[in-house]
Image (tube, rainbow, N blue to C red; front, side, top):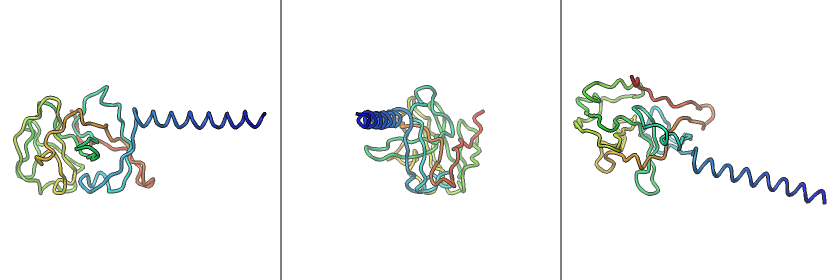
Length: 177
């Protein structure tokens, strides 16, 4: 009889752990794998990220946030928020301007190859996003992506945890003041 009690205790503990893990994954955090080089040098291909799925229920996406969004069913993109509702976004001679002010982007490896874009005003409920590897990124400059609806957001990437020797917190890389 003692064996059955011990078996039930183990089974119950395992079931509780599985249920908690599923709830955490569904509502709080999710793991995403970096595919492609559009966010280089900030993110490397095959790195694994933790994404906070609940953060945008309490705050608005902000300049510099690295976000995951559903581009089309079954296809998620990882990009950096460059413009939010009402922002005027323009690229002139490889330089990015937000609301007529040049944006300092220390996370870029080489942004000189950006073609001119805009000016465009980010509509309500949408974001303007760019990859950090600007010459190799399908982002808001591409009409197939365009402005990203906030309804498509899956969350904000905040931690690279794999491979372990590359583990680090993801910084916005911009001065928000």
